[in-house]
Image (cartoon, rainbow, N blue to C red; front, side, top):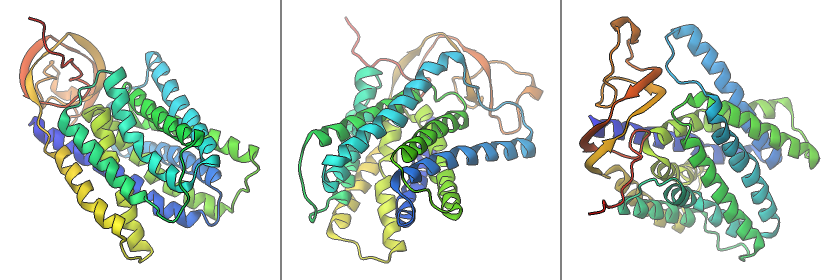
Length: 361
């Protein structure tokens, strides 16, 4: 049962990467008619508006009981931290670094977001990351580096390159801050982050006097943002909730390969040698993640919280009146977990963030 759930959320992470990956070649088509900063603005704004519309339609159709926990006041610091680190500070560092860094160097450095996310998770949030996950993460990152390798452009390491690495670090912070509120409604999280990042990018576009494109281009960018940023990031938050930061980010790291594959199809180009080299490396890294098994006796302390759950596992056995549980089985309410010690396969999801330090004798 636990491994079935694990596999389900691995596929959620892969689907998130697919939706985000397709944005690269489609955005490339748009970039001939819109500057990068206003494009980013309309992608993010489109993601938020699209998710709001979807939520309203879904509510009207299903009219079911509450299925997700709402954001609370105590979540505000994590949400603000995610917005500032990933939506404001990281983009500023990236744009500053791009001014003095060769494009080829920048493309390679941007692949380190997954590694940065794992390092932040391990060093600052005590997330357990085994050897298999580290190897998988390194392989997937290497495959992305091979994909973005450009022998024709200028190379160089400078202050700008350090700024880009710092941007990756702040996106890593963003991923981990978001993980800490991932048990709450992912639609609300992504809508707030999308509007914040979108309005900030739009402000920068006006500040830098970037031209605003036609309404047709704006609507197309917003539609792309709805799926490739909105629904993709909702799925990513769900993956963070159920897999932890390092594993979710590792799966999400397959997005460049997905984008490159679609580019080959759309632009009818022949795969180059670096694509051929990266393919087996990416596959091996992904297989390592899929085949991860982690099981040991562990102890759950008393905890009281609210989040989306069902009663099909050994962690949610609190009583209900039959009419209180919807047909889907998933619902959200405040509930209590009594202390329990047991053993089963698990990952660092919201119920398994225990320490893995050896016990003192």
